[in-house]
Length: 183
Image (tube, rainbow, N blue to C red; front, side):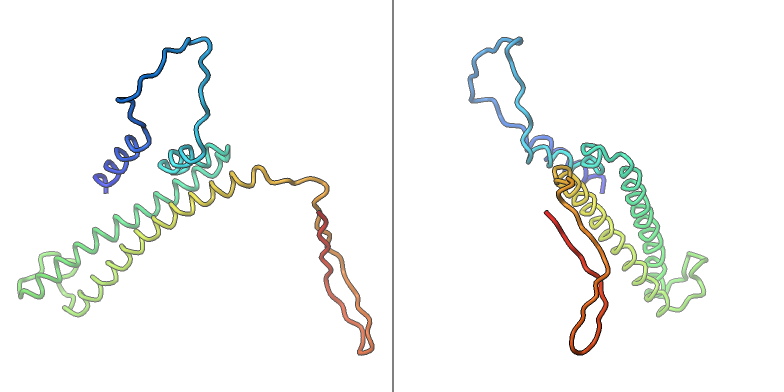
């Protein structure tokens, strides 16, 4: 996992930096130099590399601890299930080979039960990885939606009025809810 993250970091570090080897740029005066704003694509890509980066950029700092708590819980879950899976797997392999089981916790467990435990812990470990990917996607989607809704017009012209409604007809009287949306 650490190797994957370090490779991803170095790819992101060098992917977005253009090469200046073949360009000759004229010298600029420091007083007249104006920095160009970062493009939205580059900004979104850089903020997506750090969990919670989009929430920090959008000034929704209260969401950052929730995001990191979710990542912490899912990483802990993965480590727990992976460790237990490897213990049960080693006991299962010893049981198949006819060797005495060295782990005293699984010494009196049948071979079928060891198989079922191994599969159960493997599924839970795999679901933890899927949960991590889902939580990361939720983090990105939340930041993107929040950034998009910052520019949403919430003026007095936009109203939703909810009121009771009564309908009269030949068959009788009907009640309901009336939703009136004004732009």
